[in-house]
Image 1 (cartoon, helix red, strand yellow):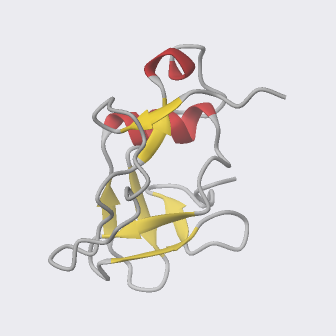
Image 2 (cartoon, one colour; image 1 turned 90 degrees about the vertical axis):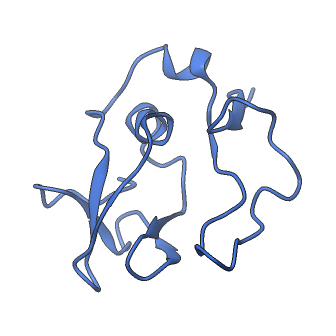
Length: 108
């Protein structure tokens, strides 16, 4: 089985330290996405950029490459970031997020 090509959101190669957390923001140094070539193959879900954290109610809006990665492969990620909590939490059927304006869980 071949794994799809990935990059960081800015198109640069994935680095070993990309998951390092910036204490000022709570965000990772870099986020992995499917490469532009992989995303160009089409989407299995709508491209949605905003989601709601069920625990705090905050809406987080992500960049286009992240949104397209979710749309191409909804189960690509195991977690995502909440801007209000400034931390990462699980996604998927038992996750803490729904796509804004829907009841659909992020990561399903």
